[in-house]
Image (cartoon, rainbow, N blue to C red; front, side, top):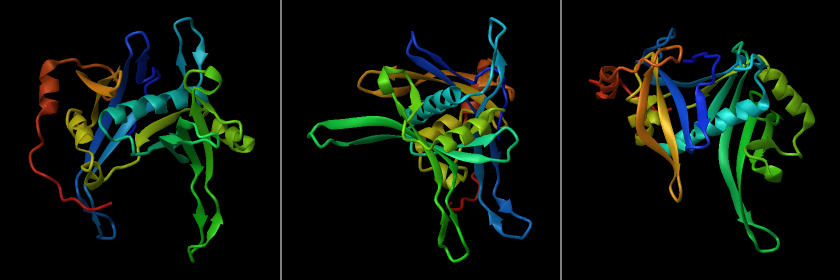
Length: 259
């Protein structure tokens, strides 16, 4: 499920050190496909889109790499707050013809000088590896990498050793906008992350909720109790009754199948 909203669904308030992340979901019950094979129960989770919008000064802001990386980083903060940051994201182009994958992780070790180091990294797979019917590698995956805080700059920026042709390819792919979704979909996989499931249980089916993530020293990203129910286009409904209804446990369970 994807939701398009010209205003960014993910907002960061640097002064209060709080980020607001909109989460949309669609439940899919277990069943059978056209071939008669069983299909598992799924939960499709989207974080909205990065698309063109008009600023207060009338200037039009186009989708760009800086915005996409910023959105991915904020979504990762939400996933950290529910102990699910190991789940990758998919980046779907506006025409739904290309699907990329994004991972945010830490790279640490010891330098040759014996000094410890730790970097916050982002890997974006533009194209997965290609293998033939015999399982032999035909083409390596195409990936680009970014690092947080390079040259004293806040946020993520691309590493200098990236293939320039791949950077150009990525920028061309995102220029008309992208949707950001959770890669994991099977309930049997999502249920391995109970804190994430608790958060998703507060999101109405075929609707959304805006979560607030606070950044606390020595704790990191923490999910607050401030939740707003959203309509399908990202606008706030704001009724306390809806929040209470969304938080109620669902009756019954669908058949689960391992991913």
